[in-house]
Length: 261
Image 1: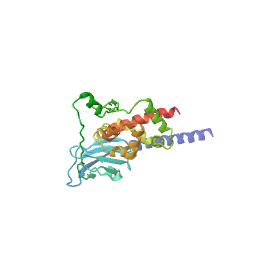
Image 2: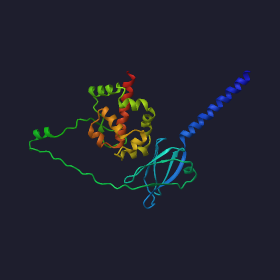
Image 3: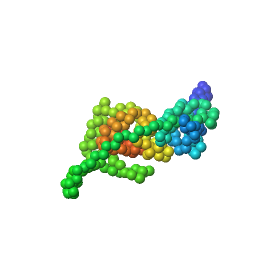
Image 4: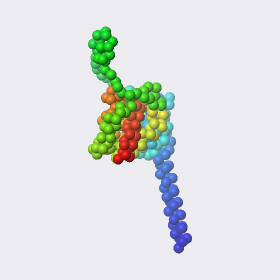
């Protein structure tokens, strides 16, 4: 009886280990190779950003339009290139079997938006003109990988109380996103560890890559930063990497305040 029990235990343990290894292997994926071409003239496209939204890893195409990336079947690859429509592609078994899989990107036609220039009526007297100029009282700081600083939100008691008051509201967006979608928020750290993704985000201002990575809408990003007391000018002008860092900081504040409840 003891031997039978021991054999059964060992069999169960071995099965569990194999299942864990298969799960880890599936999570890691395998290297796939493909190339990106222009849909209009079939020319090879260099320096296209490719991001695996599931694995949270990124790369860029070489001078021949070829890229290599870790992936698994049913993962979603996100392609981005300036002047071209961003595209999502689901990974299939054939992509691993055939190394000449072609991903096509379509050019976009951009129309310049109207720019309105406003002037300030200056009197020539410094003391008067200084008072009439708009003042940006947002605090500034910098993060690694960026050569420019940007605001960190208003870190004062009133700002903290606003965030705390928002978190204590069950209907608030911060709780809905950070509390109910922890897996999406865990991607924040993984994104910051991947240089290819960081480079892509630093060059983007449209929030498309962020919404794809975090699986939230653009309006949600704006609401999160509003709740964390970031200015309208920062929300509109910051690049995607700066926005990501702001969301990350807001999330950390949420966790701290939530632990104090």
